[in-house]
Image (cartoon, rainbow, N blue to C red):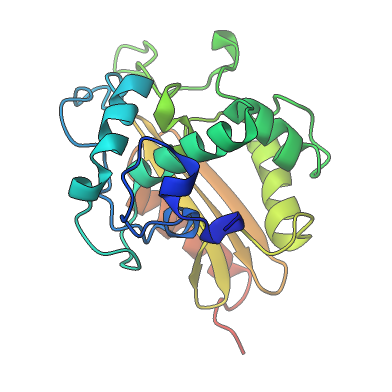
Length: 235
């Protein structure tokens, strides 16, 4: 079987047979896997610094004992997306950055590297301490990269959202986008930053980025702004 319904153990040799997890389960956050990698993978200040490719390989070999629920149960899982990223790179023989460049950025008319795991340090906008010093950022360049380790500018992110959700240049939106009433949305937060992208069925859209890890406030601000431009319930 190929495509999203391919069993994970067909894609990654480390995964024991019989888990029942497919690529679709990983993409839709219905794999039954926990939200975060178990074990000592980092610190409060940098929760993924110890989550290496070897760490992920070890988890994959015991994946049948790791699930906290049955496939089909909805539970947001960064671990699931780390595994999905491994499956995609293994199947294609390409790096995750190459896959993003070729299959997402190019069809959207964006340049390779416009959304990247390794922007120049002098181009990184990060939150500051009370003394005005840059706050350290999380280490997201390992296997957790595919769960949200890419950087871009607000303008490029906005162009990607329009291409994906409004113009739909790549077809129907990917399963990871969440739906609530008449909008598709996704949010995220790291240490010192949060963002949300929202697209209404009528073509309105919004991208909000804040140098604050208070994601709930960021979400509320985005919904308030969208509501101020018109109703967000479908008719």
